[in-house]
Length: 368
Image (cartoon, rainbow, N blue to C red; front, side, top):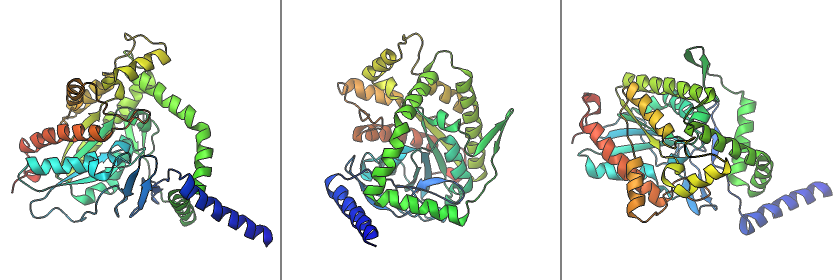
């Protein structure tokens, strides 16, 4: 009994000490019974690493609450699908791309625009299409907007979490639900990661053993994407991605919505110093890599699938040239900083407005 009491007191003291003296970066993620990775619904927390507040809605996204019924009263609804760039834990929600996009579009267009932010860290196109297929269509969007992270979406899609390549066909995997015991085990773990600094310290210490290797593999993957002559693995990743985007376009049309997509520029496309460091690290010459290759490939796929393309790289380069090299990415983190979110939202909002104005589909018409 004395040992048990001592251990409990020690754990409580350790938790209190960490909470106030050395707060840990708490997690905010969970998993549904059918295997979708989301954020913890209705969560309120604080990210000490970035000094940002995090609030999630009942859907499990970093966003305000939304009515699940079909848009009414002339509201034009956009479902924004993405990963950690759209989740945007590095800035306050009011400074993030999804919120700014909604604000900008409401200034430009004559109707009320509502942007539903469905962005989760670690999501690739496979996750996004699967979420849209299982749950996103219930939100009745007028436009489905994919934010494509060139840095890691191809790598994520190669994991084939929800779709499996069989020859020249990409098939969805059967939907399976975890047992109640497994589900509640994951829920308890998720709760501890998002609330206990002591648990998170232990978890991150264990996880960090493979973090450096994982980061190195991801950087090597980006190098492979930028190769002038890509290998078989990259080609397979792009094939899978093309099939997923085609499926997303089909599902959008079935629901009376339009789809559009935009690539998030690689930091190596806008930061010359970061690109030079990459070349030096891997002892490569500029002739072996082309940082524009991933963007060009995605835009080509979108054109082939007749999906409206949005390109924000020119706006990024223009801003950097006119601001004296002001960075748009957080150094050492890789995500947009506050200014990056502003520039991206400004560029995307103008092009999305053009897509809406020139659409021939009456279902996505925007008017008062």
